[in-house]
Amino acid sequence: MATVGATGTDVQTNKDDYPLSRVPTDARYHWVSIAVIRIGQLGALSQFLLGATLGYGMTFWNAFWAVTLGAVLLEIVSMFQGWIGMKEGLQTSLVSRWSGFGEVGSGLAGLIFGVSIIGWFGVQNAVFAQGIQQLVGGLPLWGWSILTGVLVVILVYYGILAMGWTAYIAVPTFFVVMLIAISRVLAHHTLGSLIALHPAGPAISVAAGASLVAGGFMVGGVISPDMTRFNRSVGDVLKQTVVGFTVGEYVICMIGVLLAEALKSANVITLTLSTTGIVGVFFVMLATVKINDWNLYSAGLGIVNAIELIFRRKVSRKRTTLVVGALGVVMSALGILNAFISFLIILSVAIPPIFSVMIVDYFFLKRFRQTLDESRARGRLPAMVERWNPVALVAWIAGFVVGYFVTWGIASINSLVAAGLVYGIGMLLVSAGRKSSEIQFGLVENKLEA
Image (cartoon, rainbow, N blue to C red; front, side):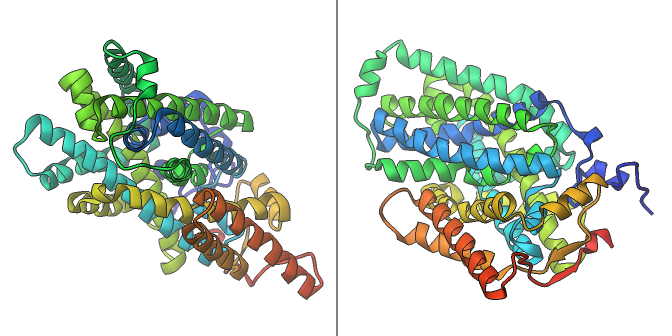
């Protein structure tokens, strides 16, 4: 039987990174350690790939404003979600049980997080495999996809500490490669001439570009608690968020824009090979490993939560990593990279409603704040939890529908605002109907504390 430490937390869970419990204060890290991982998420191949996509279809200034609009939205999401994660010490799909969604909604959120992040794993693993194939040849693309995917799965199996050490290597070298790439392009073009170039591919509007930027990291923003639960203060969350987005969106992404416009291609391996050669491609692929290890890690956390809710079984995060990693490898081998833009559009409207519900519930309605405060003081989880919250699920669906089908404005913002309004107004109507300010739906015993 597991033993319980002074904080009330099962001490054996530290080997599995606390997937179904609070992270105790003595298990948290200095903000620099977590910031390096955050920068690794944002200053990585995903943003380079996004920048190349924008540069292939937009002028420089249109791409700049698209990045700015998308980045502002993402910073707001990341900072508020990160605040919740740091304060409660809980991963995203777990804390959502007491911030709007209840058990059923939390399980669904965990599945959506898991599936979407597995999709990201597949996209970026395909780029990794594509680079290997262009350099080495030999195996077909699907064969390299399998081999590179297995490498990342092994890394994530050993948890956040191993991932942090990978970031210390991959992040600086990736930045060096990006700086070398843009400096070599600028050796043949003035910055003014690059900015004046017209895109070579199909046109992308500013609103559509902003949605792509938001979709490119919306999952990462909403699941910020997966990372910030290891932080020690709100100030730490703020610092790593600002630094991460400045580097990722305005440095890496805009370098991708300029390179795509200069070389008339959206293929990141072609862009890197043309400017930095084989060594550059190697370090870009190493950066892919860095971002993909976090994708797989967070996907595992979401699935662990969903399995506990659906099957009432606690499963190992490490074993779950092996399963979801296999699914990501399959998606990569089947060619998910070919549907990159469609994938981002879906994410940009499906994920923001989750943020809206959580923020409205946690910061404004505060339905479970006292319960969370009391249990946090004991280092435990609340003893009771809602089974489900129908208003949250309706708001989630409404936000997705508005974001996907309304054609004016920025889709991500449309879905976020619509879900927040539907949830807030819906809960006020329920309160008025019950003639009570205490709105809770079917409390049940929290089995994690049984």
